[in-house]
Image 1: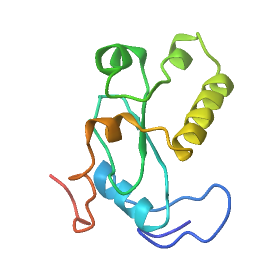
Image 2 (image 1 turned 90 degrees about the vertical axis):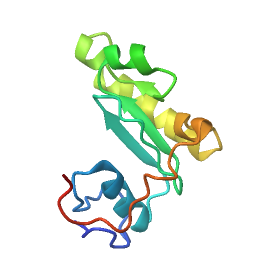
Image 3 (image 1 turned 60 degrees about the vertical axis):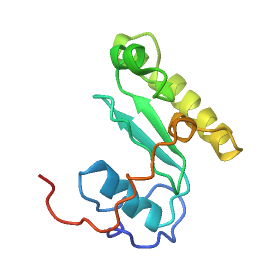
Length: 126
């Protein structure tokens, strides 16, 4: 367990105590050393994180159909019973490898992320 923006030194899966506001949460993860963000969205947040590639994963296929030009991967097949969690996980992992190898994320292609890096806001957001 890591505090907000604390440098992550362990290998494997770790957790960071971050606020729920997406841009602040991701900012803490980047400050802690994350070099790739996987951001799940169910409402279609046009999120990007300029210092670090940010993959947007739709949690439902209706959202994917409405915003597929802005979202990197549709995970809605799990809810619809058309895809297993393992199969979707493999697609996410492959996309992470492709992105780490230079493939641009939708946010990068659209130029999102200049305003989503938020190191100055740590309290409640209204």
